[in-house]
Length: 111
Image 1 (cartoon, rainbow, N blue to C red):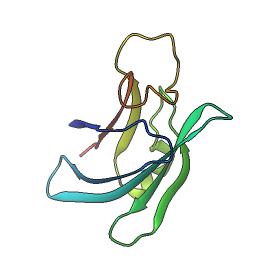
Image 2: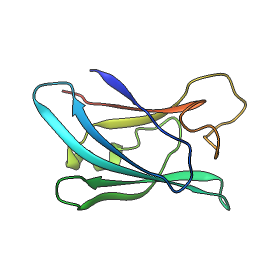
Image 3: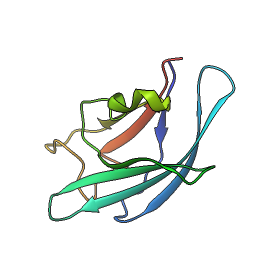
């Protein structure tokens, strides 16, 4: 299984677009990734959109550490994703300045 780090910016209310090519053949996944930081609750959420159709695949996905973010969405066949702590910090989850630096998003596939 190959894992790739998704290059994220920690700019709140940013829209980031990625064409994901997962290891395991000629399988391309076209995803538009929209990230939002919620100041009141102190957490990030993501929206995943099929880039070719514009259809929302997942909305309001909380970016939390320690779980497969896409685990409950296996039927979509878009791989697995984790938020991982990349450097020493007392934080348990990314805040509005640490996503993309202290915490990274990795995406991979079981194929």
